[in-house]
Amino acid sequence: MRRATALLGAWALLTGCSNNTEPSSPPTDSSPSATAVPSATTDALPIEPTPILARALSRPVPVPATDGRTHLAYELYLTNAMGQVIDLESVTVNAGDRELLTLSGEDLRNRTRLLGAMGEPSASFGPAQSGVVWIDLALDQPDVPQRLSHTVAVKLSRPMPPLLPAEMAEEVAPVAVSTRKPVVISPPLRGPNWLAANSCCNEMTSHRMALNPISGELWAAERFAIDYLQIDADGALYKGDATQLASYPFYGADVLAVADGPVVSVLDGLPEQTPTTDATGLTLPEYGGNHVVQDIGDGNYAFYAHLKTGSAQVKPGDQLSTGQVIGHLGNTGNTDAPHLHFHVMSTPDPLAADGLPFLFDSFTVDGRLSSPADLVTLLTGGTVHVAPGTTPRTETDLSPLVMDVMSYAAE
Image (cartoon, rainbow, N blue to C red):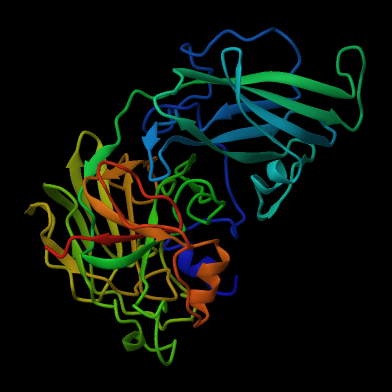
């Protein structure tokens, strides 16, 4: 996917192509805690050897999506506690006696990354090595359990029976499903054919895989982040020279406040990047380019990134109204093509935060692209169209999924 990772990673400091990460603390509803002591709220587990240590990075928040199902998107953090290679054979997500999801074989491998080698799928853990399995439970509504647990099947390279047989199934990582409700907001853009590129939940996108080691914790701020690209009537992303900002018709589009609430921070004045060229020399605050952070209430903060240079129309402390223009879509920061990066998070810091789900109050689903390969086609100058057999439909209070193509009200 030439150039796709840089664009679709938006501003993430660390994505699937990054290397250095550190473990975080036990799961909470919003952010890691300061201690590694097991939570007193977890279910009791059998007292038995567990060569692979496991915990969820955060409690999953149920979110209804455009596929008619409720999604629980979270990350299972694993560490090999042994001085030998351990192969991960399967991961099963349970709700009591029910098996909700089993990952194995190539599917498990594709959803597993080792820390220090985040760009390469692998389910083989070396001595003392840690990694992450990305979980996406898609459940029929309203069949959402209150608690989850995990069965991790492993194969040891140096078994020590009877204590440690060659193959083991561990019961690990109980976690409570969060009772938090996703915030309901308005879309941040107007007009037709906005593609939710690189967003949650069922594809291993670079947003979904972005894990940021900051201040001694591991954060998944971009778990539900969207990169917005607009497809024109011919099914193209741009016309003409891909290195020219003017070739992208949606460059400069109004970016709108998604809810009422005060502005927390603004960064403006960073230069536009040349499309198709990777950004270099950025400091940590500059990865989002010119951006606005807004407090939209109840512990939710909206992040609008890569805004056009000099376009910010708000300042810290301003009280925004839903639909108010806050700036214009640009190509600043860690980006190689114009787009709006948008996400909701648990703190005012775009990186050191837990990514939270959000629902759009009203929008039209025009359809979906057939596969992530369509995104590569767009970024390399080709044309794409929504998958055959789809009919536009109006939706309310739902979360878009990756590859959805949507229209938002003009006013």
